[in-house]
Image (cartoon, rainbow, N blue to C red; front, top):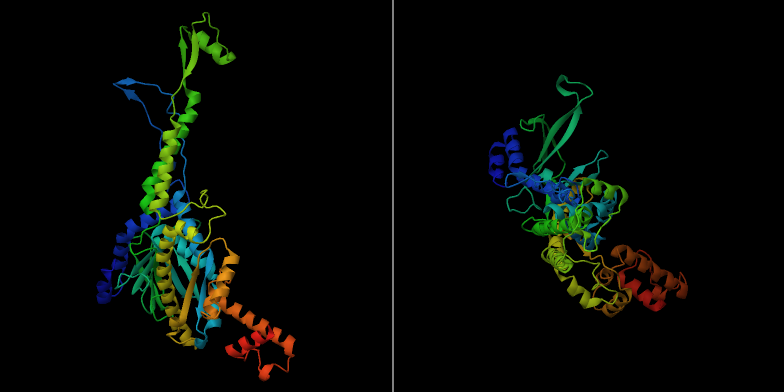
Amino acid sequence: MNEYIPLIEQDGITSEIIRVMINDHKPDHDRMVNFYERYKASASGVPILTRKPIKYDEVKGQEVIRIDDKVNNKINNAYDAEITDTKVGYLFGSPITYNADEQTGIQETLSDFNKRNNIEDADSELGKKATICGYGARLLYIDPDGNEAAMTVNPWEAIILSETDDITNPKYALRYYKTFTWGANGKNPDEKVDVFNADFYDVATIFHFESTDGEDYLLKESKPHMFDYCPLFGVPNNQEMKGDAEKVLPLIDAYDRTLSDVSNEIEQYRLAYLVAKGAFLDETDQENMKRTGVINLDDETQDVKYLTKELNDSIIEHHLDRLEENIMRFSKSVNFSDESFGTTVTGVAMRYKLMALEHKAITMERKMTAGLRYQFKVLCSAWSKKRLANPDDYLQIDFQFKRNLPDDILSDAQASVALKGVVSEQTRLSLLPFVTNVKDEMDRMHEDAAIAAESVYGPETLPNNQNTGDGADESTRTAAAGNAS
């Protein structure tokens, strides 16, 4: 899609370019919509749910009546959703920690933005859409109250254009979506009429186009978006922008078919043929049998039994196990319900079991970091106009990801004690999984140190007249805490 950049720079954005871009994006749009519908286990997204029963209408020109085509189980095993939810829970279950250099003075602005936009949930949803579809999209805008805001955009509705093939650093972007209006063009005022919208973003302006047929887009308005960069950007799941389950969908479909067919075979036992050995059952006998459930046999050599198929359950189980193993292996996921994840698995052994998932999570973490850094580059361009930040303050914001795993608090505490004095307090506290905000934790530690020192020396007679309040420096607080202990 990046080939449209020179055309846009030459002619500006036009209705024709909008139409052609949307048409060219349709294969990716349909693919991502299908992935998301499949994640939701909707009938339109999962192939097994639309399977038709096999028809045996004719054999060698003769009509054949079958009873074993009446059962058509359609069992969906949502491994694709499991793969997605496992990674999202592992990577985003513990919220991303945002740390800003205190010298920038934007901590409060950063905190307000995150709280106002429920950024913990927004980051998780962005990561989920990227994991399902191959990339996620986020739009920054100014809300009616004049505050900077962020929203997750469906990736199938977003086209990101970048000169470097990096959608975390866009030059232009297009969002197209459908709404409706009431009784347009003189129609019934109670009738809903579809409206196709297209919002094109450059470094300064939003161009809003509308169409009633999805083909002829007309420019309705253009207005500044109040940022210095394109506010619609993407976060890729990986360099290839492929979903986590995309490579193993044929394996999942094979698992669905196998389990559904086995279920059919089991259920068809009650539809098995009745075989009468040495006895002839006329229509009257058959009707009496159906009515009473009793069959009278005249000779001990006669026998009646059902003709059923033999199921080799060991082969079926082996086949299903192999499919499940390959699904997890090639999607780089793990099955936490496996017996190997017992309570005795800790430390290095656990890390080896999670190595494939960790490699995948690291790739996503780096892409997410690039996207968030661009996000705050855009935000700082607006905050600088309000004198809340400098344009380059985004370079002083760090993002810390923590894996969401059961905590071994004792081991973590022992490691933390061993690191005291070896690394900075901020780094040491950041390694503790139960510390979600390092800055707040350090502030509380300083307050505790001040209270402890006052309990020993009194509020007016601290050692060397040192103050442990908010104005004290780091060395003073540390000394006070050490003297108090």
